[in-house]
Amino acid sequence: MCLIIHNPKAKQISQEILDNALCLNPDGFGVFFHDTKEIIHTMSWDESYDLLETGRPFTAHFRYATSGPVTEANCHPFPIDDTFSLMMNGTIDRLVSKVSVDTVELCKILNGLSEPKIVAILTTYACRFALLNRSNGQVTIINNDLWTIRDGIHYSKANCFPIEKRGLSAATYKTSYRAEETKIDEDYGSFDNEWYDEWEQWDEDVLWDVEPVPKPKSGKLVSVAVYGTLKSGHGNHRLLERSYCLGDAYTATAYPLVIDGLPYLIDRMGVGKRVRVEVYRVDEATLARLDSLEGHPDWYQRKEIQVQLIKGGTVTAWVYMIPDSRSDTHMNDTGIYSDCY
Image (cartoon, rainbow, N blue to C red; front, side, top):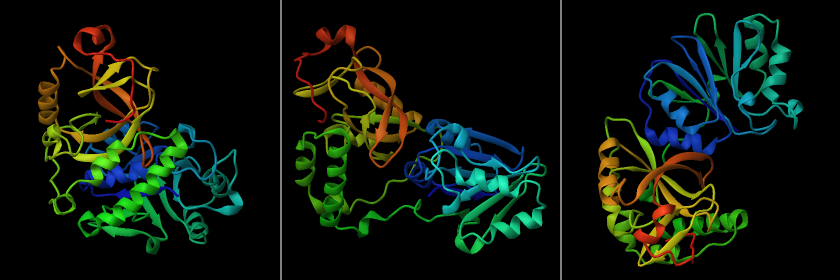
């Protein structure tokens, strides 16, 4: 059902809200910068993050496709005429089509009308709209009573806000996690449940009473996918305790994961299985510590790959791998490959 964030005073938005916005609405992104009147569309998560971290006033649309193909051409906003463009959160049933976006069809109806008439028509629909004026950089919020306002920022939906996990029981979390696991099995095939069984044995009091760790205050953040001892519950996870976890994921393509005492991922695309990972947003100092731990580039080598988040969306993330050319000298390639450590 999409999400619009209207931030006219360029206030800082938390990393978790932006992560949730992209995870829940993974089908494309568009932004209108009020200061330059510039519109940018992208299908890239990383570019979306970069655009939102520029410190400029913006109105952004995160698409969840309900009609029309998932392509950059179908990212909001859409032009109404030479002056106005439109972002929409909601669905107009009579305009829904498999080949077109309902917002595009609505823009065709509004073309040629004056601004007051456009606003009057939009208020008749139970949707949230942002009417963008490309001539002066102004944005009009339509159906304001349907929006959520926090710290002067308009959100067309509230489901991007963080959920406080301290109030969630371990039993409730496990029930929801099992349901998620079943869905993953249906989508990607079954996987080894050792990881879950190990997690289930953790001390629940410790797990749920940990205070939230603050996000680093400065420095560019990058995504890192971890599959071994850096995962939560393992010995080296201490290096990531101050980093925000974007979520569990699978590698977009198969790689050989060998577990021979310690886990090793070989840089040999298309062999083995899609590997389950945890994805973190880390600052430059944390990335340097990870490089030191993994012996990059002399032992492991850090490489960017695509990973598919379980809660939705694809992101580019760094992962530490053994080069295929050195798999026989750096480790014991048993030929038996797993999908999870």
